[in-house]
Length: 157
Image 1 (tube, rainbow, N blue to C red):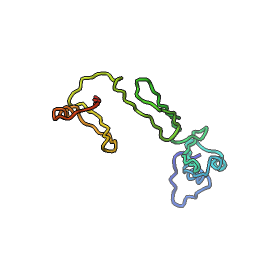
Image 2 (image 1 turned 90 degrees about the vertical axis):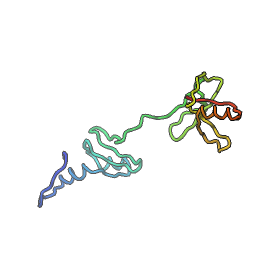
Image 3 (image 1 turned 120 degrees about the vertical axis):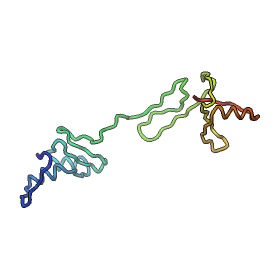
Image 4 (image 1 turned 180 degrees about the vertical axis):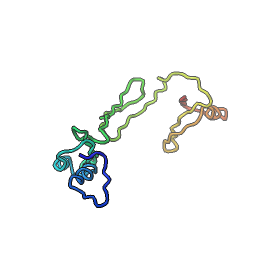
């Protein structure tokens, strides 16, 4: 088993052991799958790497077993849970890919607050492809003095 690397001298004989230790064990072999890897690397050494084409995964030998170099993620699924006051609905468990939930705003469930003129208000603009926009409470107050009537306004701070 080689440790580190070897600097070869001019005219030095390259032995089969040197090739196995320095070129084979310290390179990253590419294999079709774990079966092919295990058939060709019968005595892996700690720190040796191998790439498996079937899973596009890089493995290293720990001294006892092959382990994924990146490691397995610990997230196996995401669940959106809802409570009566959370405003979220329609959640589901997802183990991969995208999932969605709906945010429902219930104005009668909101607590009261003192609105400052620089507080930001979110607007779902129904005349502009329902794009989400923002303005300030001060800008809305300015509209009222200009004679514009307002419906439901939610101020978020």
